[in-house]
Image: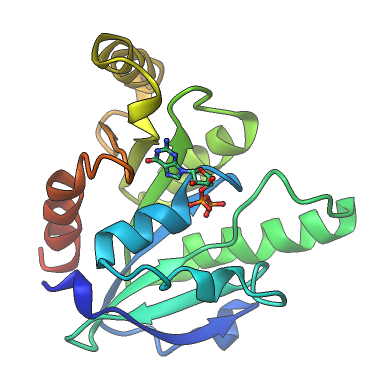
Length: 197
Ligand code: GDP
């Protein structure tokens, strides 16, 4: 699978606005500022790809990208946690996101990005639970791994793995750095396995 060929397909606010539920897709989620846009740009080697998802009006939307084979998609879920949104908006948004995670048949797995310096926030844990309850594989990228020394990064990786032991059949974790181009092969390989089982 060639991730470099990714191009924007469409945005959706609700499940019924998503592209047809055929083929296979993987979704990327994470707290705002976790490094999701950088990771998507690094993976696809397109500096501006994820900017699409950051344009005003699109930040609350589910953004779909197709790969060279149009049966395969990458999905950029809205960044959560930071935006000062009202409780009503959050509730509404949670509802659509949870629906997407639970109902979407072509969804093969969730890539969850967390800043290595503060992983597993309340929101992150909520996402892990949603994925787990839906029987959806979840792969965690501990991003900005370059911010820690190698030993400290490794320690953090083990700590997160340990905290997720009860979910281990469905949850995996790796180190990632867009800055140092670390962890891209591991991620690409996993994505390929998810998309073409
Ligand atoms: P998003 O809100 O999750 O899409 O996060 P961004 O990709 O926009 O990144 C948020 C901030 O973290 C920006 O200032 C990036 O430059 C920085 N950042 C992202 N990835 C890395 C990384 O691998 N290493 C370092 N040191 N900084 C990063």
